[in-house]
Length: 325
Image 1 (cartoon, rainbow, N blue to C red):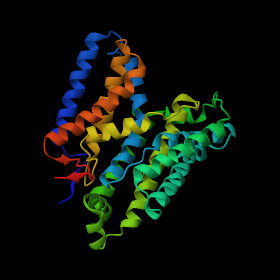
Image 2 (image 1 turned 90 degrees about the horizontal axis):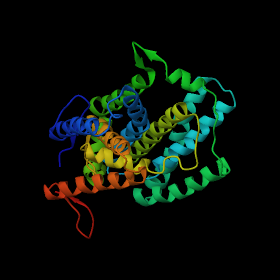
Image 3 (image 1 turned 45 degrees about the vertical axis):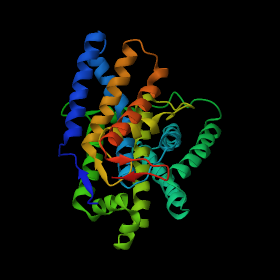
Image 4 (image 1 turned 90 degrees about the vertical axis):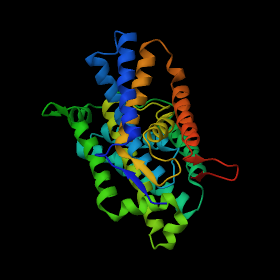
């Protein structure tokens, strides 16, 4: 099957549908709650989208490759602890900001070693690592929150240029870098070829191991960068950090048009998927729906999208495994 890739600057039916859904949701919640269509709530909504945009970018690459990582939320937690410790040690802001991506990349390397070299299915391997990392968070935090962190990192990332937050530029730069890698380098074709058929990609001479390693490491670095933003935004690290992040990321990416079976991705779709998910979560909270129901919404959206894909004849889930039609 020929690889399919929709980039940041392209549009397809799914992306237009997501944009329309975002507009409809904004209108509905603006009518339902007087607190939704305010500048303060818009800022909160965008701030709450930052980490998911970065983690979703990494998840887009993993799913396009035919992989997955359900440990990303806990990876962000470990990286956030590293960023917090660096802040507490009064290290230069630049070093502190890099601590997240470096730790995330290192953990991505561990994941790649387990999944690629150990030949463990990605969902099983990352689920096992999730358990290990969750215990590591408890040990590192000693059962207590890491709070009251200095404001140095917050001040830098909250700064604006031409009226636009520095954080927005950094996220746009991350998406642009990935788009260029997918569109202008062999990496993009190799990634999607592996997602379509790893065996055929290997027989075609594609360096499968190298590409898979690189993708897990890049995803880890993006998750670590999300941790840097998290600490800058909230100035604390709690025990339950990242609990639902993996579910949110997978749902947003699949909602955006990236195939859960690999071989197809959309960066613009990921952005719109993240925004729609956060709009729905924020709006429901403002109209009185408890946050306890947010995972239900996210899981329901994921199941619904996959059922529509099956109904449309694009996916098949036989008992022996997943098959793309």
